Length: 355
Image 1 (spheres, rainbow, N blue to C red):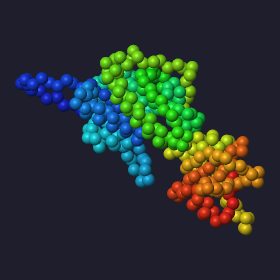
Image 2: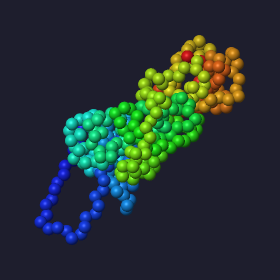
Image 3: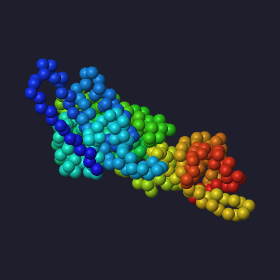
Image 4: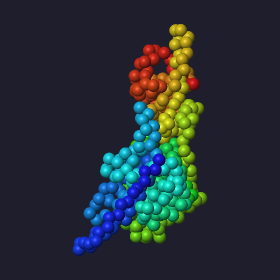
């Protein structure tokens, strides 16, 4: 669905004696999920400042989709925020593809001087990139050329990096490979999860963008932007749902990093066996592992290698190399998340074995 913009022209036989105010530069924002909203909010706030030289002339976002519990067809979080801020619906575009001719024609009518992308979710073709006068600038949550691709924050946490950051770069046809205007790096806490880090980096990216906008509009950003060293590039491919499973034949820190990285979506899962020694019955359970930490200074006895134990409020999963993973919170299918103590008490003395 494309929401088009219609322009009405009013003719007047008289000329006002009041000098018109300087025309603001039209800027188009492209984004879709909730993390993009902080960027759009920063742009709206900056555009309303008394000395602002630009205005948000339009929004491009993903088409409405079915989400939430009721599976209602809802606009993207960015589209909803723009509507709530009073942006006319005919300035909100939601093409299936950014190369649709009808959409590109409507975009040309707006004569944008700059396009900003932040987790938009569609590939931008050359026809699109040729429209804005000063090009298209992307907020990417990594220190480019590291972690180019769809899941930079998740892959960085999965790798257990000690630091990451956010980059402001010009968009080119090659994925996340354009010249970098500016970047900012941060230390990574070993307990932070992907949704928190993603939100933080886009918020910081907003500040970086607002700081650099004057240089982008006057053209000096293009001359100072640094080309990326492709030899140092790493990729951050999209996460597949089947990556969610945890295998306890890996070391605990590997599993802990995966839990942090995949928090939110798709989450991480493990299968365990509940053993009833009195009846001899065995029941396989699928657990969603919600939060973890690496167990320190704990010796796992040989007799406990295959079993999950409970110590100091945590489920202890033995892992490779004598390491152990503390699971603090779990969720059964169709149930609410509960802490480890509540889950352990619910076993009523039955044993828990890794599968």
